Length: 187
Image (cartoon, rainbow, N blue to C red; front, side, top):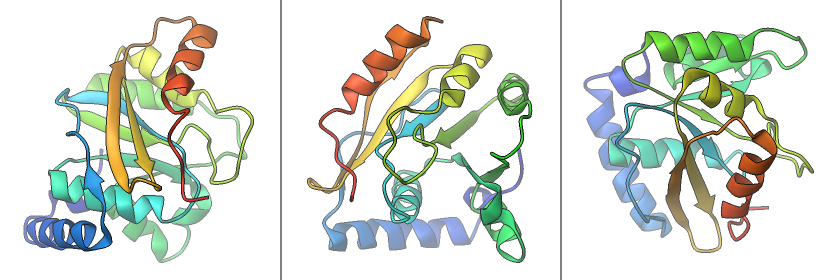
């Protein structure tokens, strides 16, 4: 994977301090720590606003966690592209059928340590069904899924249990989504 802000020696401690202070002043708290596993898929739901991104980065800096995240290709166009990649972004072109799942499975297999954040809704809009790419990436790579959330009413970031995909996607998705029933996004 590529060099990110999480690898930048001088900037990372400064952003950690700013994040800790900013989250405290904004009234946000973290219920528990990032998982200790070296490799996992991190899903974050509900994803309802662009504010989820800076909050997630702030919690990463405050916790000294290192993540990558998947975002739509349009975020990586023009001068914003290098910045988004430096912030840990991986461009996803949703208009094309490609082997993104296979590419990510290969990336997990090649890495000693890798955490990729994927919003299961695939968008900030309300959806009836989640995208399943995160599930197939985790199952194919043999890594667990960390159930993460930003609950806006309680101003809490946290993690549920680590979930190991069984291959029975219907049953597994029901169990994963059940965890998020009481979590509320900004909108």
